[in-house]
Image (cartoon, rainbow, N blue to C red; front, top):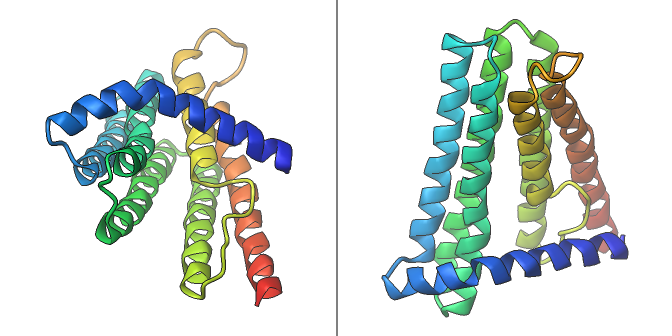
Length: 217
């Protein structure tokens, strides 16, 4: 677990170095972390809208799923940008932390609801059920942590936290969208597998956190 944390931390530090110049320019122009947070949520909403459009207009062509994934991953980077901006520019506020947390939940709800709608409309019932389970696990991981911290218990343990969920979801969407026709199977399976992985590990993480809180209390 410590190796995993070190790798995760190393990736974060690398991303911070990459986004640092852009963040400093944005601060000079008066852009605040809350604006960045809002833009990220709107981007996730746009990605979900692309999925809805794809389900209704071109369900057999997965290209739009891939483009939705790209829009969502770019928007999700905002989640790192707003926090880094708040810390480095001394713009941290209690409301900002609250606002960021709330909009993070909206982002996940929009993305996974968009996928579930796509699966429902295209007749992939089990994939839709799996995505709903993924959504439940994703929300509960965050909810358990919030309730624990309300009891003054640190609860950031577990594997499938939001960055990991975003990466797994987007990887499945991009692979499905841009590898269609180049493999010998239906590439939508990339999305099935990604959601199945999150459904299992996110819900496991939620219960693992419950056990952790019980132990701490």
